Image (cartoon, rainbow over all chains, first blue to last red; front, top):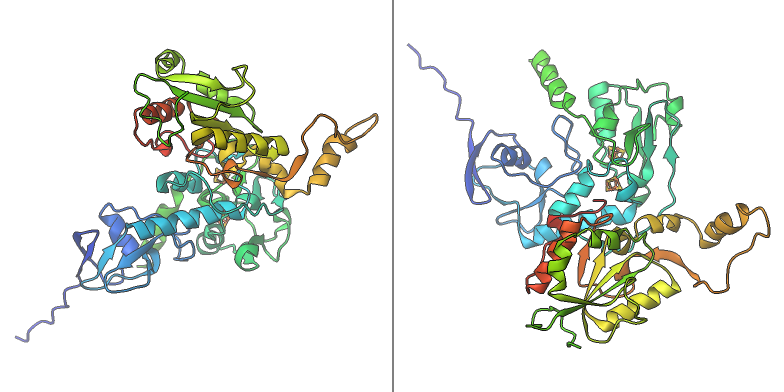
Length: 244
Length: 189
Ligand code: SF4
Ligand code: SF4
């Protein structure tokens, strides 16, 4: 009887923060770390959406490499030695969060998302107790044209979660981006008032994945906007199962 | 009078001298300070309030150990008082979001100062619209957090910072330890 072909072992061994862990090829450093209870700071990454790799908060050090790697978009490799926390990483992460605060107008005390905001919580977690960088105080707009939702550019960190959930989960592709760098803005359709959008299904998914008070339900007062995000892993798992 | 020292520890039996000032804020931070409630009696064993909105003294005495600033820097008088506090106090704390970030007062920063003044004093006045200039300090073009005007040693955010956070920060400093202000507060708290 001919010997059966045995598939090669599909496991990699690597080290994350002095912990020896095993992983499947194709997994990212972020996935494997979170499977082992290591919570790497992140804002643009959201489980269930495609990888964007823009906020750079999840940067980690890899032994033997001078440059930093974003954990969400770096695949694990055999023998990799990853460190997710160091004075250098802590410094960079703080500067990133400070830049996000300096770039727009975040007045937490009067924000609908006060107390339920990922940016605010990240500042507290990372020890950002004040902003060294002078505030830019840009004059931005608020789009209240939609019946139920509001887009407040003053509080947007341009993470593109709303763009991705709208295209990838709802399939409407209403949300997009215009401009570059600090001029980047979230737009609806071809930069029209949200309320005039022909493509928006008013599903509200963008509102609930938004980490800050930039996308909110109307009629909420300060600190009243709590996001409900439970639908996302559920929907993506169901879709994956249907494809298999 | 004790010497100015970065950490108000070597006071020994001597009390730690404390100065507080109210700049462009709503006084909520001072209210939160008073909300320490009965622990104030405890605290009073260790500190002496030498300058404050509730103390009738015109200037913080030189060599004050601890200074707390509530409020943002919005006009020339605020900037002057912040510098006065920095000179007098060995250790300076930005107390609350207005002092730490500019907070609500800084919401006017997205507009030109002239537009803001016109809206407040001319467009909305029925009779004799005019810009007040006598007896009031001129507004600065932009509202700033305190640390953009003078160096600050510790930032305690919160709107207002909870009484527990203020109490902890003060008692840790008095005990000669370095408090972690974000343990009990954050922006917008
Ligand atoms: S979006 Fe978050 S960080 Fe920005 S003002 Fe609101 S609570 Fe603060
Ligand atoms: S609106 Fe919200 S989800 Fe969209 S990019 Fe801005 S912060 Fe991110």
